[in-house]
Image 1 (tube, rainbow, N blue to C red):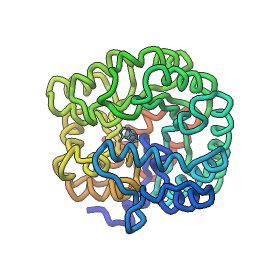
Image 2 (image 1 turned 30 degrees about the horizontal axis):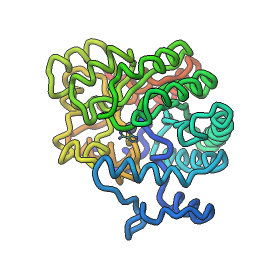
Image 3 (image 1 turned 90 degrees about the vertical axis):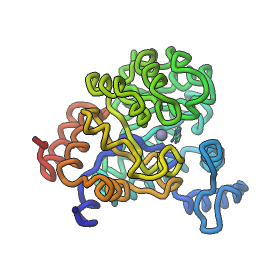
Image 4 (image 1 turned 180 degrees about the horizontal axis):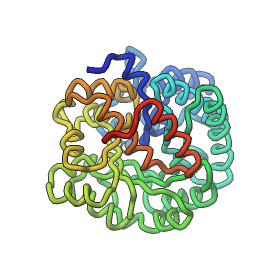
Length: 337
Ligand code: ADE
Ligand code: ZN
């Protein structure tokens, strides 16, 4: 079993992290106070976020995000999140960025917010070595019309820093085929594609997401385990799952970590990666995720090296930056045989 220090130091790549969802409660509390925004109801007696069930989580998430008002707040949030991640041994973070919370989908406002986020990412890289890229993400329950606006934001800003396009939010609303237009637009802009599926809905939703949105990665995807033929198809297709075990347990998708299918999916040849989703909401960190996997499934250096290499291969990043990250990874953990 790896020591705690070894787990902290182990180089980690996180592909599934919502920027607002990574905001520490103290950061949001302080911001709300300074902005005179009353969101006292989102905190419990211990100062942690208060929510019950997935709907409750989404409402608290909205309220928390409402405290972030303007580019400077997103700059400070990005710096805070990356400093914390670097302290967990994270060398690469791909963050979901939501224009909905950065000017409501207006392209000009989005550019201002994005410039601030990117400036913070550059500072973080020079201070702590952590590399960040952004996935512009539409929010499913805001509907397909709004998603088109978000796709325009993504098209306008696609490049070195914005490298992906995603879909998050309430999976029970709308169908993947309702989002074909935004995903086609993002694909044409050269962006890597990912969509949340199979967190709340079953295998059919995962199949429809792969078919209609032609994504390279799926956020969660864990309910594929209900259908062995889909598990085989995922393994064969090489589609990568961004699993977030701690998130799934906190939200009640699985009662206990040992019930989580990540190890079974991996054993079946599905490409899996591990992320935190919205760490302070779910009482998790990358280190805690790894500790849980070590404890429940006996994972160690070999398994963690494999998921790190899988994440690097699946990262939405340019070739030179990928090569630099590979060098850092190889120094710490050679490619597993
Ligand atoms: N947005 C932030 N976290 C999410 C999750 N776990 N599922 C769907 N949308 C989200
Ligand atoms: Zn998510």
